[in-house]
Length: 510
Image (cartoon, rainbow, N blue to C red; front, side):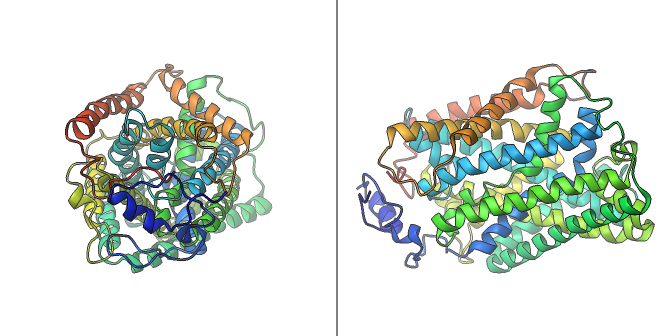
């Protein structure tokens, strides 16, 4: 149903002047249907096509998770068979979440992700839900994930230098992590097109490394056989908290399929390309993940996987090829692969900051929402990088990596669930809004059920006690931050009128 036949850029200019259109047709709006908007110095350029968009999705998903978390997941669930089952379950749930976000992204094709969806679905209190999401995303979810990936990148580079998979000097690992984060922000800030080319090239490296793992595992398994799958489910844990811990890490490894939802303003023909790039990238990655985990167990016994800490891929190649390849050459390739993940994550994180600042959700919006002469959100990148550095250097040693995953994963799943609830709400409250793609009911139900599970069970005391960091620390810290964000919302939006004084001064496109 055609309601308003105007391009997206015209909608933005109208809202800046205070004349908000009542709705927009996705199949008639020029920027949505495929034609490009006229150049505007206040807008980021549409530089992403189908393949570069898919490269961002694959590049964002494939990061430190598949190279570092298999040992943690095996330790949590207790058996090889259940470890494999958790990876398959993670893939299925992620596909369901991706399908829901395909409807959201094509229905409301503007950068910002959940910020846009929550603002449309829950308009009262004014901007509260998207405000809390933005602060949680830019201050917890994104920087904690980037910090974890940066730290693992440093670990693999140290592995190549020292030949040790663990017991590195804590300061050296963190210093390399900081260097990785700064490098990625620098590239995206000053060399935009080269940064996109580099992260696309590093995505190829990631895929090749995973293919190499699969082929090596298959070759070794055929040549000498494997006993890892004998009595595959022996020792499986029966405690719910074990599966929450494992699922947080699996979902951390699969996270990234929503990357294009945060930067859709830079995607050419978004209604056509978003579903193809997001789902295609996720499916390719899921197949590689499951096969890679099988390959790990074909080469290494379960005890070796558990003892590999966060460098299981390095230990894998050492066992398969010897010290030279396994300890010196392949760790560099894996380090480059995780570097590519940090680059993709920094790209997406800075766009959330950029959009939030332009909407008036953040102070100093005229700075954080500014596009530099290098055609990049340079100030937003600097803030994302600074917060990432804070998360790299502040957590206590030893359990820092797992804590970073947990504290970032909790609010992420809370907002995943709220976004799907918002999707169902909008089907009733905004029936006239066109939906080029409609998510299946089962996909929405699975995503919601998983979100509830992931938000409730972290408060159950784990079997066997806890480590130095209490089991409830991550969810409590995340919820406390969101509570403080509500107070900040009252100051920024209600008292200061931040939305009225914002650069964009606009509401969702309906």
